[in-house]
Amino acid sequence: MSGHAHHPEPLAPVEARVAAIESVLVEQGLFDTEALDAIVETFEHNLGPMNGARVVARAWVNPDYRRRLLEDGTAAIAELGFGGPEGDHMVVVENTPSVHNLVVCTLCSCYPWPVLGLPPAWYKSPPYRSRAVREPRTLLAEMGTVVPDDVEIHVWDSSAEVRYLVLPERPPGTENLTEDELAPLVTRDAMIGVERW
Amino acid sequence: MDGIHDLGGMEGFGRVAHTPSEPVFGADWERRAVRVMLAVNMAVQAGGPAFRHSIERMDPGHYLNSSYYEHWLTGVCTLAVEGGLTSAEDLAARAGGPFPLAAAARGRAPSDGGGHRAEPRFAPGDAVRVRDLHPLGHTRAPRYVQGRRGTVTRVDGAFNFPDLEAFGERVLDPTYSVAFTSRELWGDGAEDGSTVHVDLWERYLEAGA
Image 1: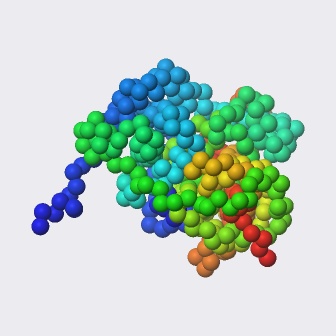
Image 2: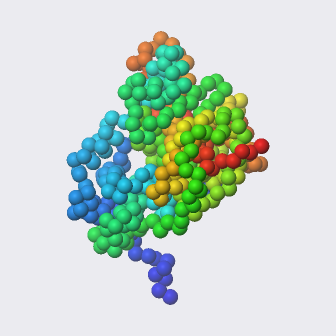
Image 3: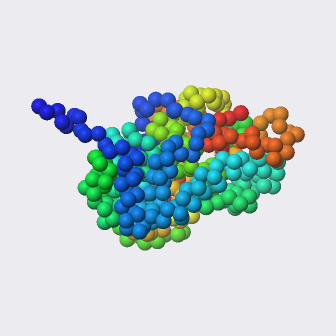
């Protein structure tokens, strides 16, 4: 018994695998480094929860904007200049004293890039994807967010073309803050629904 | 396909390793994997469904033991081989060791002859049942809703049907958001007080009383 089947040769390091396919693409003239870097830099610097926070803060101070946002999320978000891939069909779901919303993608990693950026590793992980639809209340409590029993939880599985953003409730004690002062209070986790205040 | 990616409702994965914030890329190779993903998908003209299906076909053990950007890398390298840009042997030689790729596709949904459908057949409030499809190929009907009854809550317009688009056939089909009670999905194991909304193409649905 060699036991080879149980001790296969370790995989080539992932860095070496990336370099391997890069070299194939470069040799075939299919790798425009400058253009690709520009796209990735947009992902890194122009997309992110700071955009979603502007949307939420505007909705908190402006009832007309809030109404438009809940009626047509894509158009209202575009008013602030945000849109594009993974954000072309936005639906905004509103937390209330009796409803809490939670967003997941059980099949892969769908996430509203223009307003939240690229998803964090935990959002794409098996524990989050498997449990969010099966035991959301238990999962949220484990993550530090206790949703009272009389609050209904709505879980949104982003399985088609729509991407979701949670509109959290405006925190108590912020009545005198301006839109610009409110935006920094809005967390990514509240806009996914794993945080509630 | 009822693959390892179709995680909704599975048990045993434990706690979420949550971080309140983190760098966009945890390592330089992740950033480079994104560039590779963009370049390959452009070169072989793969859209979202074909790209997703390449990841779904990964070995389940590898899928669970690798990070999401490694999924991207494995998927697009599989597409690059299938698209004739390189070979599995060439990639392994360049990488200096075993280079895992996803398995070959096992099949696709048959063309149903229905053609483009833009006019939705269902309306908000309609009772529907998700068909028991379990196709061997790509699908966006999660296993945990197949066969289950729900209520249409939103009509979202027509988009290419992913089960066919993954294999290059573009057929429009209306999409809906469908609400399922936790009890309908999980029976006696359900947590009360929750509703799960799943977005589904019309071809996945039938009228259900």
